[in-house]
Length: 273
Image 1 (spheres, rainbow, N blue to C red):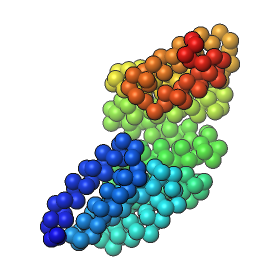
Image 2 (image 1 turned 90 degrees about the vertical axis):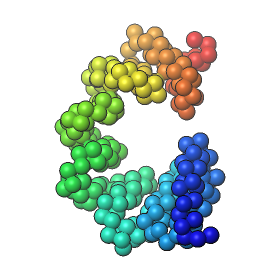
Image 3 (image 1 turned 180 degrees about the vertical axis):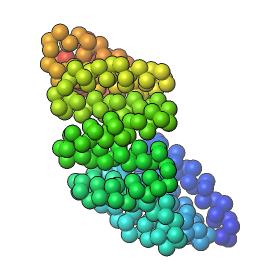
């Protein structure tokens, strides 16, 4: 095959790889991604080779092979972007390294990349959405490390205002939910409940995001259960029943998890309620 033929055929393998990934067939997706990689290598397309290696790393991560994913990003993808002078892709790749470091428990190393490399880069570009995503990663890492106060400050006073400025209703709802989770961590259940009821769930309803709405209802039920008031038992059951029904309807992967939460907090199987 000629270089031109390989470069024409590679996007077809890319589409098939995307489909297999979406279906959860990670093993077959790896096979297809490696075929795509070979095509770009034969075509001499160095940049697309790096991008495809990143997609293979994503598959390794999805399979729980974090070490393999980290090696691909660090030892193969990053050097290519550095050599071709693609600064944006290099910084994005470093961000992916940070995510994997956090997953492996090296929170300090992840925070160093986000704070000292990614955040300044996107601030200089004026890329507000990317900045908000990185701030969310930092807040999540700080919460993992137990720095709840600083995680809360970043969520409320730095990340949230960006999404409000952008008018991103879904992202506002997501951040509101995460602020509520931090309040739950601190035992401030009434405040968390108010946010979930008035700020988070109505936005998911507004945009018609049934998956997020079912997860949000389950989180609201958990918050009520953690508050520990007997009077909330019926509402907890109803919220979880709604969440379970919606999840079944849309084929959500959270169906079994919601059923387990119901059994734990209501005390009977959801099928008996």
